[in-house]
Image 1 (tube, rainbow, N blue to C red):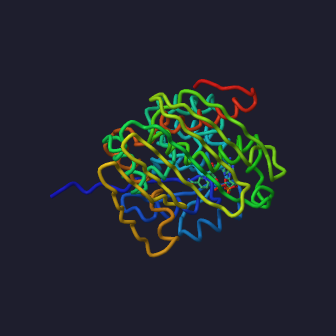
Image 2 (cartoon, rainbow, N blue to C red):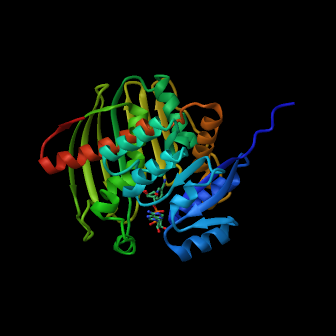
Image 3 (spheres, helix red, strand yellow):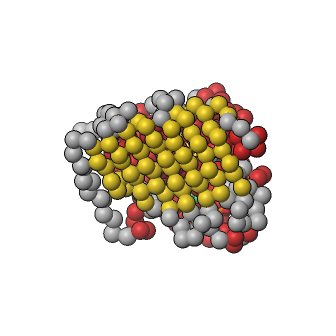
Length: 342
Ligand SMILES: NC(=O)c1ccc[n+]([C@@H]2O[C@H](COP(=O)([O-])OP(=O)(O)OC[C@H]3O[C@@H](n4cnc5c(N)ncnc54)[C@H](O)[C@@H]3O)[C@@H](O)[C@H]2O)c1
């Protein structure tokens, strides 16, 4: 008879829009127990705890960190707060899952990676698309060399966010809280996927601007990329075009082309090799609601397994830092008006 393993205690900090997804998915994992939540908005955290049937809630996240029955802390607060909270959690010997981006500066990212290493706790940065079936399938096809030598790898993240989206939030679209706009907040998902699929970026020529919205950060960005493996690529990221065309990655190799396209759950739309066309069967979900969150659940489950097996989570701190470096490289290039090497 196998050993019955106890459930891993999880605490959640930040009960805003993505906090609900984390709570729902943690509750769906039988190996996990959502023990407590924290948010400095008193009413919100109380209502959230009631809604999800969580017994313990706090307005000071440090109280949550002091609980000995919590092993993993999920951070769902604004992007610029990730490193401070992660460092506090690591110093309380908690493993850390934090939402993307890892933080908004490389200095802060490095500090949190260092704090987790020093305290011998694990760190995982949420990039749930890497856990989506067809993204994994695309990665395998490329790694197996099915596409041949990669020639072009292009990313389009063309979203629409009304001005209200920025104005209703006290941090989105601000330099201090968000660290950037269409790329740092939305586009970074695709940038993480692109560099995971193709490999490291060597140089970047970027251009960013606020072309539609009256915000301090970019709502539109373009970049030319050269990858270390010699491939070229472009990135277009925006929150200012209507209608919203969502996300698309087009990869061309010497043996064929693969297109990943879609909304929250990108699927292989087209894959044609010189030898034969591959038809991918799309995984069907009963509803959008059911589909959204599935990949989050897989990534949270990966962290639970990493803790139990004492291994690194699939997207550890160094992995999660890579997309931030590219985004900041595009900003730097745009500011300086010249190409930057990473
Ligand atoms: N993976 C995804 O697809 C995805 C989707 C949305 C957001 N996110 C990321 O999740 C993070 C949160 O985004 P959101 O849209 O949920 O934001 P939000 O503004 O809706 O929620 C943030 C919450 O954090 C709380 N908070 C802020 N500072 C705090 C502190 N110091 N202590 C305790 N609580 C604090 C706020 O009161 C708020 O309830 C961001 O980093 C964002 O990039 C990821």
